[in-house]
Length: 102
Length: 177
Image (cartoon, rainbow over all chains, first blue to last red):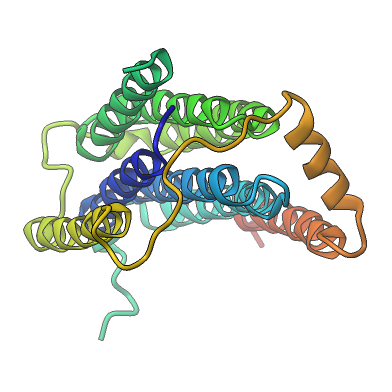
């Protein structure tokens, strides 16, 4: 059988990859994809802890479903914002959207 | 090494390698395809963890809906998708160091918690096996049980509706007045 720590390590690595993408990518759509990777990593953690620690109470599963819902809402709003920004500024490069920068 | 462990390692390699492609590929469309592959690997983890409902929703929601939405957005903003300039911003080296620091810290904590010499002992071994449909029944009951998650469930559906209506309102072109 698979030890719990294997799931946690894979999830930590996927989270780190997503974090690097979020911090380092220039394109806003690519940043959004990195956020989706991070949410997936968190979901692996939740389901693995549910399976190994409390298989009789579905708290981890329920939370994973809520994370899935929030991810769908986040993707819809984020992409709508990116398309709206693209229409006005002709750019989806996050560094160029610096109107609020002091 | 059992067959499950072999499957786990294959899934982990698929998920992590395509995750790396997502964050490093210059071509955004290829990155989106790699992201779908990565989501597929995560769905495989859910199957290994005996959560079939989550695996199915992962396929439907992430691969079926979110990936397609992202590909739509890439297509609509394609004019600036030039592939010859760097995909990273000017602070990517600092981002790499910070990420390595955080990832190394998390993995250090995991390894030290699960080592047999640590203070805290968490069960690392095989859990009792579940009946195939049992986790789905548990999850379904908990979503309609007033003592469990019926209110968060309803709030999540209202949030999803609000987010979708809001995103239509944001993305709609402005009227010319």
